[in-house]
Length: 417
Ligand code: ACO
Image (cartoon, rainbow, N blue to C red; front, side):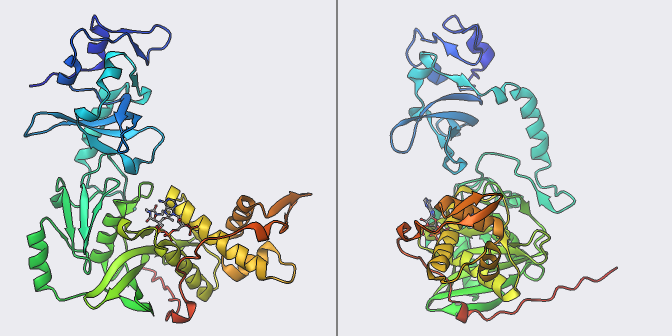
């Protein structure tokens, strides 16, 4: 069995000493024998240069380690410092800068100094992995991805994050998903057999939008629990900062599809609380990676605001936004505000802009600040449109056509037990 190279061992090694005034740096770690380090697994918590996808060295922290059952080689799950966690990945020893280790250019993550304690803690949280909290939500308990890729329709997509799937799908490197029913399967053959038995070729729920080849379906989480839970599991592969809610009853799901002669292919969705105390009009929004950067995210955002206009309720997306979420919202908000202000002949207040667009005043102000179209003067915000004509947008993207929405707000009634 391979030995574990932990910090104590490194400290004890004759070849290494720890610099007195900074215990987090190893110095003079030159090894007398080339390659000796490669035979010993590296400890979780080490920060060291690792070869990134583009061939450059980037500092990375080892989050997890495993031994390849066939080759016996150690694999490391690394997080690149300063990069989004969706880029975390398993690397083998050929990606590690062993020279940096030999030269002592390696750091420890202070947060991992209590690793043993943490390991114990993690073990117990792993044991309770599938226990739900009272509110029906489950916290993200691990940083390591549990499924490498999903197959959805004609696309294979690499996952970005961990998703707390039901235990029967743990450790399956590829998850096969029926794009119509969102049933999960463990192999291509099983998916084929499943689709031969099931003729459904569209999501459940009601089609509330159709224009050209785009449809949107409204799905009630309380009625289509299985579909909506599986959609939440799938979206968790691409959403890091959201808690997964097992209880989908309180949400509507708006699923966007590309339609062709074979059926309605899901491309993305957003969920929305049936009753939101904070006036959120979107809880989670996702475009599956194979369909991203085609304007579908902005379509979904525009759709959510069109529903808010029909409801006559100002809305905002649930916070915090992800980095990509903020980019997309910022782009939508900027486009809507610049269009409105360019065409407005009369003076207009932030309040009026909010009433027309159903955008929350805070979102309007922050966007105008980013665009440089607002000044804070004598205790109030004043629009300053001198440079509005300099603001140019590329393609406006794909916005939904409100005249094609067939939807009325539902009245939610609560029964007192
Ligand atoms: N890098 C740079 N800009 C990007 C990127 C990217 N990777 N992705 C989108 N954008 C920009 C686009 O350029 C576009 O701006 P522009 O029109 O001014 O050029 C804008 O964001 C929207 O692009 P779309 O193509 O309409 O959006 P897309 O279909 O890619 O979906 C979304 C955006 C939903 C955020 C998608 O990236 C996604 O699903 N990400 C993973 C899940 C996520 O983070 N969701 C948001 C969480 S916040 C919340 O749920 C409330």
